[in-house]
Amino acid sequence: MRDVAVVSFAQSPCVPANRDDDMAEIVLPVLRDALDAAGLGRDDVDFFASGSHDFFEGRTFSYIESLDAVGAWPPISESHVEMDAAWAFAEAWAWLQLGEGEIALVYGIGRGSLPADLDQVLPAQLDPYLLAPLRPHRDALAGLQAAAMVDAGLTSERQLAEVVARCLAAATANPAAQTSGRPSVAELLAAPYVASPLRAHDVAPFGDAAAVVVLAAGPAARRLAERPAWVRGLDHRMDTHYPGARDLTRCDSAQLAGARAAELAGFAAADAEVAELHTEYSHQEALLVTALGLEKAQLNPSGGPLAGRPATATGLVRLGEAARRIMDGGAERAVAHATNGPALQHNLVCLLAGEPG
Amino acid sequence: MKLPEPVTTMASPLRMEYTYVAGAGRSVFLRALAERRMLARRCPGCAQVYLPPPEFCSRCLRPLGAPFELDGRGVVSTFCVVNFPFPGQVYQPPYVVAHIRIDGADTRLMHLVREVAPERVRIGLRVEPVWVADDELETSMTSIRYYRPVEPADA
Image (cartoon, rainbow over all chains, first blue to last red; front, side, top):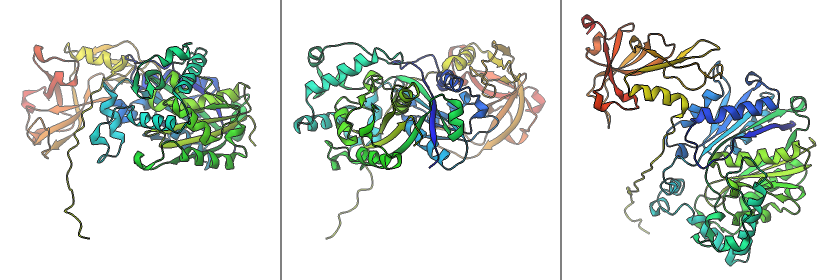
């Protein structure tokens, strides 16, 4: 395996609705921040990979607009995934593993505010014949998962409130967080349900933001960052399309991705001091802690998605935040997790470390 | 076991409504269209004049300069004749869709060319915009109904 590391991460503050900027305008300042921090110019980048989704944008091939911020003339090498940009990160990492270049830039644009009603949009990701015609509420499948977990004794409503309280308090130190605060567990438990046992604060709040991560191989990484965050292992696995065929109280796909990433990394998520988890709902934290075998990791020190969910940039932010903890010397080993699909259907696990191994 | 007659259709209508965020750059252009004006912007780095103008030059990534008005006339730089009928079509085929290089701009604008027989349209034809009536003006490309030849002799 080639040594590849994150050398830079930047994101724009997650806001409930950005009505000023188009895709290029929202990503360009973030792209500049990320490149400036690594002392790079745009021409130094060998490969661009991005992630966003037309169903959030409401237009076909919407991401093309964002290429105006990359500068696609003269023609560049670039790729896009129609999903969370964490998978663009996976593609860029694989591209560097193939020895195609030295430096790759990954960006994610997530705009959860453009659909007038997410209940119109989110059912479109479900089985088109047996589930989509039912038009389930956006949080209905997560509610089923949370209820099954509470029933199985894997979490409780109080524990969900404790997760939210901890994440919102952590987010007070994160300038990019959309929401933060210090509510008491009792206050949280007094709130009404949106899809029992989930309350509004158990649902990661959708918003708009862009994130940029710069990856570099071997000597370039050492040149560009004082302390690169080495990508030691990465894998992603997908569960079946039909949620009714899954045991929603387990997350086998995250477990398998974690095990495979650990094989590559030479250490496991259990060894990580920091975990940034793509928890779209508070109950998913307990599910992922079990699936990844987390033991000592500080969970979502950024506040995590419960403090801001910029749609398809959310997973890439997890990778960036985990890498940041290594780059700033706060951690030696970190794990980042990203997800796509309903109720943790598709999961990506990335293990990062301060040494290339 | 004999299989039942296969199900071949299932109605599952999807309706999705979105907010369109035009951004700072496009808003300048679209607002002007509602006033029958065409605003272009020049890159201070490479001097390319964009119409419609985004906020940044997509080559240099520099913010474009102040908007300035063009009179909207231009030259057909390429065109095709649409002969194929399709659902939602506004005009009866055959009709002409063209790339038009507006005088003073370095990018091309796509629009219809009408008031001329399709076989008389040629690359290099000088054309001018035909705007909709005052009460139909909108922050949209549809404020220009179509383009037509400048010289009646070309029609």
